[in-house]
Length: 291
Image 1 (cartoon, one colour):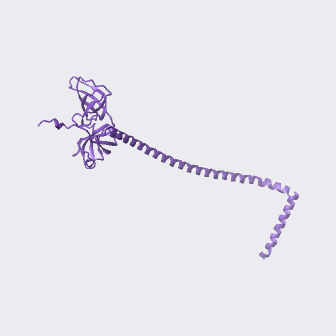
Image 2 (tube, rainbow, N blue to C red):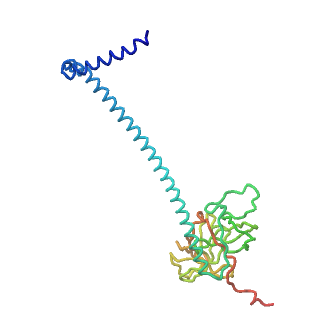
């Protein structure tokens, strides 16, 4: 029964549509269309407004997601640039130190030299404190460097950094490592000389790590600001290694010698790379010894 009614229903709907079209063209349905427009127009505007808001929200969401993605990309790029900047600064610092070492090598072609890195530190600035056990290391202020007896390093050899600035001397060696006794160790003694006036003395350190040049005769004039260099007296060190600069001079009538407080040429807390002078021209003092 339903199958027979199907075609008739279609024809009836088609006929009704044609009638509505004819009436609309003739203007008969205008009052009805006006009434419908008053009813439908607000609904249409509401739907249009909702659709517009949805479009704006969707577009804003997409824009926010794209902006967040761009921010993330820029943050990653900034992090990479910061890390690269750190690496470049480190390379620059290493390059400057290597350039100073190279200049020192060129200026002293007769010296035997071995480069090394600092691998450990002692008490460069303040004493380590009381000894509570058996300590085989007698030095308060020292560094350990990455070369040893296998590299030709021996006790007593001078150690420099930053060009010709003296750090200290080799105090003990192993096959691959060495202790460097720093200039500000209380047990350190170095023959010194003022570069301008050529006044000689002994550079030593106090318990607090302050450098002092002693054994300066009372009648000798020491000026503040003079550069203190190593002396070749005793043939233990090459002459001309920079030790520091005179900051203050003191003398009391009850003392035999003047004392000069010396500011060190290097910051012992920031030593990273050094040169060990393994060989330098020196006289053979045994030649003048009698039988």
